[in-house]
Image (cartoon, rainbow, N blue to C red; front, side):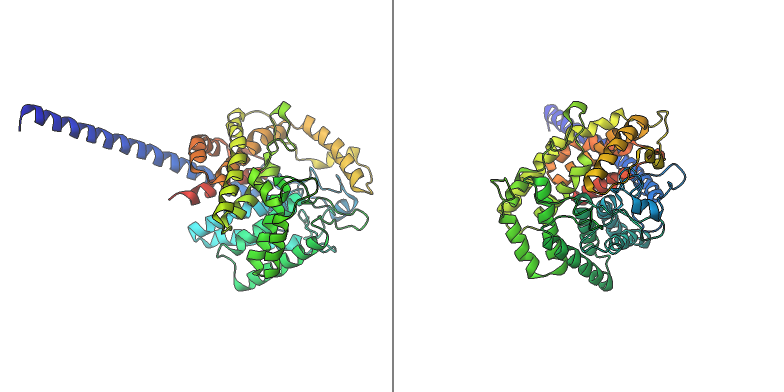
Length: 443
């Protein structure tokens, strides 16, 4: 062997060793990052127990540090204090948040095989069954129940109803459900689904004088995806051919004022602009993320590869639009002075009796203005914690490897940024949803 050949081989060996060392360093750095991320999510998981409603197991909207918030009593729920919608009180979104959160809890339980995780998922499942049973109107889904385990506000919404179906589906297909629980879930979703179908997919209130509040009739992907995913969930849980036929009919039908079918609307993806506020760079991703989950469910349970590809396009479109919102977490200051005001009863100062949904919305709008201007900590948690975390989940739900990788460093940094134990809003739950969605996509 010549000196030149020896030198060449040594050089090659050095390059190989250098690359190996570099890969090892990167692997250690990645492992350190993964450990830090996992530790952050574990703290989040622990923190979220603080928001459990004792009477239902569902998530409260908010809680002061170290205690539960003041709960409305039965008369306040009946009279509509602070308003008939339950907006701005601790029971506003129990079904909404818990139905989506059950996705993360079930994924976690599947990974850990820990009885405690299954028990926690089961508690929320039972809470979801409870809120479908407390009303006297078929198809009504309560937002949550107060401390007596029954009293509730009379107005639900489509934002509560789809997560109700979604959460029960997540639990039922997770492998956690017993045969008896499966039978309960089949009975519950069948009754609610049939009632909603008879009501033309409008969400009934629990008061004859108020009428329905919320529907899935819009000519957009937000509504179309929720309706189609609900029909698909009914098919998957019950196994009934009747719901397959219902799904097919709904998928090929055109909503009023639409030139496209509901399925074609899902191909376009959810609109960032709908209900958004460009002036404040605020897009209400928390309201729209459930529709991304709905399209993902449709995509994952679809057999036709062409339809799956179109649904992938819809998922990717919304995720790409939402991704820039992730970086807003950088503006959130964990140690900023200020107290999250959880005294919702102060809104009763502008309370008026409400005899219709229009009157309820008018009272709530006035109260919202007061709350928004006088609770800066809430504004910060809503804009700079809730929205970035929901953006993380929306991107994760896309399932698009390239898009996720392009945003992965920002997602991880966002999930590691917050001191969860200092938060008063339960919307941080979606951080767990994003984490376990991404974890399940790893090879």
